Image 1 (cartoon, rainbow, N blue to C red):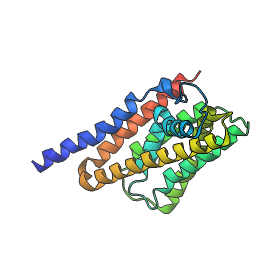
Image 2 (image 1 turned 180 degrees about the vertical axis):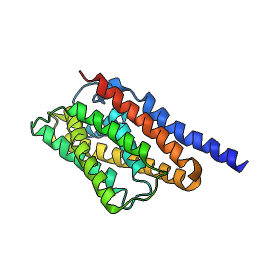
Image 3 (image 1 turned 135 degrees about the horizontal axis):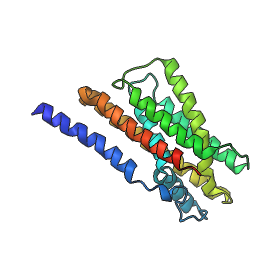
Image 4 (image 1 turned 90 degrees about the vertical axis):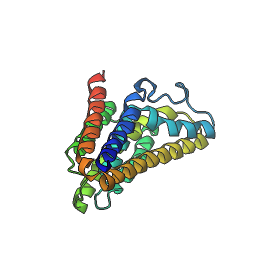
Length: 217
């Protein structure tokens, strides 16, 4: 009975994040306020909360960053580095600086982090050097994800912009923390299924990134 119970929970813990990823709408990405620039603090905050969620590529990366952090030395530095870099990326866009192939690099970053998650063996511990390397990759990806976030807030007033930044910072940290907690539960309670679950979610994230990469015009 105990084995059956664990297997059931393994399926649930795998299906829930995949359900959220698969059914998030790609067509709504970057259009949290129906394509309109937020015009007040509240709308800016809501738009900031929505952008990383309704953008399937962004959501997939944030989830991957949280799951990869599980079992690693100072692993939470990975999603934290990513979130900080998204603020920098948004600032770059607002300054009118153009980055080359932002959509392609965002999609590619999702594929790479999905691959890393797929290859991760049972969410085991890694060295600080490996954590720093992944955090560096996350920062590079974060600049381009943040650059995409900036598109929704161009022309907004300062208060609205601040609210937007707060919104997408809070939601990204919340999602990454939730993924980290979920991964920790899998690691501790479902040790025998941890590798399989990690690979399954990683493959799904890779598929999402590949879909966006192929769909770029």
